[in-house]
Image: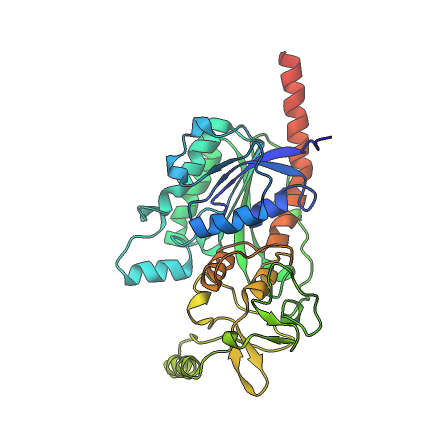
Length: 357
């Protein structure tokens, strides 16, 4: 007997499916994904390796090429729309290159308006959007005002926002803004979501001697016989010398730039998509050795992905993907908070349809 989902949703700017994981099926809050959009071929490779039940499922690449009328009907729209145009790092980089950012970015900044046209056409009962904390302050708040005006005044949704730190769930300081909207007025209160006290430290995500081997990792990251992370993750002497000199230079200039060395009992900085370059924001202390990068599996754990999550791509691509993803249990907490209101909205919708029939 086929299980009937509690609701349907679409997954836009899906990345590797972190948001979907929180909303779908038994591991999430019971929804069924009916459409995915993701343009990056490597992210799509990881996504497809982990979400294989694509029956009745539409998979699209570039959202700008999707006709909103062809999007399947859905109850909830989900989207972690690109954050580089609004992030502190992204804005700094674009300024240095003399390029536009925010809504002036000709490729990424306008993608919010693809969300707008889909919501306008399909009128889902609810949506949840995710972005960097800096979205609220970008361009002196004007960017965020445009977004809120579109969602509330033009589309008519009841909208609330909250900055949630993944630190409540994993040993990583990662603040992200969640934007939740409902088509019909209700008493949903985003601030009523209670987050657990941060307790986890770096040891909770690191490979440990004696840990159970993960079949789909096939020894790519950890030598179970020796009980050690593979040597390739330890920084080379040249790179470690460079990072120390770079940090010293900025420290003497009064800047805070430098590497983030993490020891037992500590938490980490935010994992970014540039982690593959030198790993400098999160370096793991090793006794009597140079520090090392996190392995891709440790990055997965740091983002709240279970060890069942398959990593089919190269280390470089994996680092980019986890750095661009979401802290899954943080999204799951918000999904749990939204679920009763989604259910009430759908009951009211069905009752209205019955009366009209």
